[in-house]
Image (tube, rainbow, N blue to C red):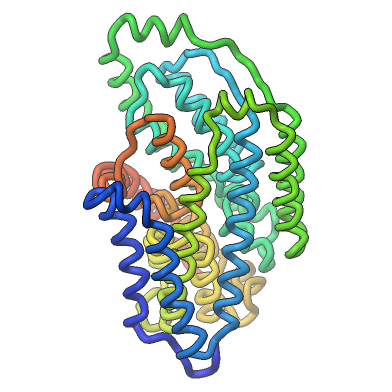
Length: 421
């Protein structure tokens, strides 16, 4: 951005309209929204882009945001396509204990293939193994755990941490410093899920419980060649742009055309979920530019000074903005406020701030559907599988605020309230 030039706060309005549209329009006029959401996203995004180009004369911010979006959608889209070519058939043993084990294994896997990769690979098996009694909370807790909280142990796990790795955070720093909050938060979520799922299981009729424990599918893994393409995408993460995006797109195309139709059919694979994510997030990425720039320029005056305030500030904004640019914004703010040596100085002398920002960006990404890329995709895949999912507001009011937020508050208090620089 040119020196001494900042966006007017009024330009945050398109972003607010974008969020309100996602939250309210499916209830006001669902048919209209399903038909016109691409036009809404593109129109609101174009207003903000035009403001940056012609009013602020700041093409660099627009170019940088466009590049971030391209990298984001290349990763999300390629993992979606490749995972759609892998079919896991599971026995119908969806007992509460089996579900907890599945979510825990998926949460570990998310640190190896990313929350996006794990979500796209496991959401369909998750739906199938619970098909006799699946409810909204099964989808919500999948998003809470595998799609978000799970991925804070490695830079591969979640996009914000990968951006930190590219900025100089050591690869194994996250595992060394975040494993205990990860273990506590994941355990708390799994404990609540087990309580809810056991009640759900016991309410199911004896016939349904028998079907679940005795008449399920056999274990089967098809589309194994796509594991190679999945590995290519993970390797591409470490390449510079544009080779990174080119390899991801190439792997996705090769996977799609080499996968048998029967595998895609067994997964009920179609492009509707990735289309929805692509259009909605192009609007989100574009309209959130003024909000992020304003925060970056005024962080020092907002009273954000302790690790705990950095945790909640980066966390809450990660819930309503994309968590990757939010992470970078607070990382830059902390480096400027507390560490003259940049990120190396922050790690050496002010490490609790980096812990707080990392946990906030990853954990609070589950606060809304737009906090992290996999959230909307999981919701969309579940809906196309005819599974009831809560709407944008219901997700927040019924699940995120009363269940997730108290656990995140407790985690922040336990691990950060006595932290000091």
